[in-house]
Length: 255
Image (cartoon, rainbow, N blue to C red; front, side, top):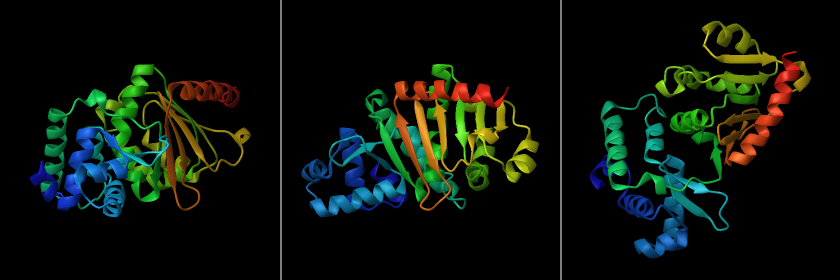
């Protein structure tokens, strides 16, 4: 594993932290400093760097600053992050994911209840989380539902195009309310994606924040003002209550 991580550009200290965190599933900087024998201030910096690179996540629901191991499949989101990604680098990432799956019991990976995604991490997060969101949608037998600010589509339409090429996206119905958007009407609508149902609704007003329900996940997305961000909430009861509210709005908008 160390050889693969070195090929991916991680330093020896970053590798030590990465491997330790995956063996423990989660940990605070203080605990990880004790386990790795690295200086605590150094651990803080390295954890932030690994988080920034997309190799680990931070659990915002914890009382103390806590970092957690990602589900190995989420690391596949590193591949499309950079358009100039080399085939060799892609191969190394896939080998790393396979190796982690062999060594870890994935059922024990802790999923943070609230995760904050910074602007520079949004694209990677969308690609990495797609199969996980889709799995939750199919398990709950729900549609993707909610409402969105049209600026998201303006900025991330490449991910939407990619989404509809994925096997995990097959047979998933999407229902979203949105505000007026020339790009949505003149470009996205003409692509004819099956089961992508978009309704323009004046009654919803000037949406400046997007809210989507993906099974047991709720996403709050800001692409209107910098810094852009995503707040991902993993809570089935919260998602269900949001879905009930949306159903009322959808019925009003489609009458």
